[in-house]
Image 1 (tube, rainbow, N blue to C red):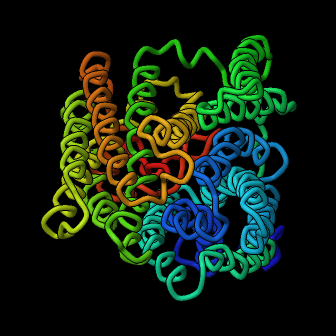
Image 2: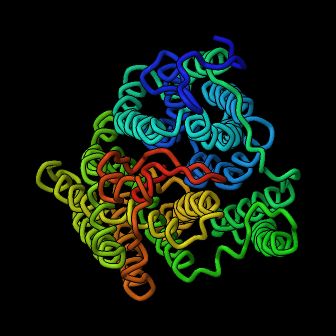
Length: 516
């Protein structure tokens, strides 16, 4: 089928879900976004092996994670805008190409500096393909099948991501850490070919004629400078001070530019909503705790507990399974009773789980010492993920719903980025101490306490700022009730990010995916 020709399976205004064209389109979207999701989960498992191969410092390991998050968070809003303006399939395929090529560079990296640069390029590819994968589904499927297609996309993406750490651990143990990047090559080549052959092109006729490139550049410079200063803070050199001050100035300049721009990437009036700002503040604090937890857990399990990569990768699977099972129900509950209570209780339960994990010592059993804390952590998380994004979307003006979801996505990623930058310094895991079992144990214990405090702070913040009735809304005429819509789909903690620039969400009018 020609990509420009009308789809023979189309009915009404789009492609039918139960058709060959629909299956091809869904396969392309899931496989493309799945590459980015997998790399967001497996690299944590590989960090100890990468560090030993390159004799890398703790700050270098931080940059392997944060380099990717930095470019992804900085450019994800821009990626959605480019797709709307120049063609969603075109930008999606470009993103797949960049991501695949940079995966090859990661696999052959001769040094840790080369690997960090390649990871930053991966983030650029991810920022182009991630919003495009959902945009293509929303634009191509007929309205009556769109929600079902989005649900299948998010569910399949969640399942793939759930097994990412397990697959990564197996590849690392059986072959090498380089194999986690090589596996992207055949997937990327297939997705690029299939998208060209089987995905129709689409654009947004209402998209802005000018792209806010200056805003994107200032965001990237601001996040890069501040992140570098935080990671290298122990050095306290002139370069660190220059980077930190320059980063802060770039972020200030970004907000000035966005305020004055006739077509801003981020319309600042969206923050006039007290509930929108409050929900994003809760997101930032809680996801900082989550970022620190996931960064150090697999390292602690391998360095201090003696786990193999595959064992460490499988250790947190219960969290994802709990999210897949209960996140939609959590969103429905928030619709019935309001978001304030779930967003207060959920972070507090997360804090309890983290405090339980703080007590784990080398030699303890997984079943009796680690698993209970993981389960409590996961249960708390189910009360946070759907309600916080639903609150963000409900608090924003309808015309800004797509931007609102993109902002919330970026806030979550930046929270994790800053946690990865700050925590090792705060808990004494700098230099080679990261690889010393006794130092890692002490650092992990202190980090879990800090993360527990952050999570609890998020719960307190929600109680003080989130309105109990922010999610109460009447269903659209002829549409599902929020409870019915939310019961249709669920997403895992590492589920796909929301697509900036449109109204699409992982679950209609409610639960939404978490970020990796």
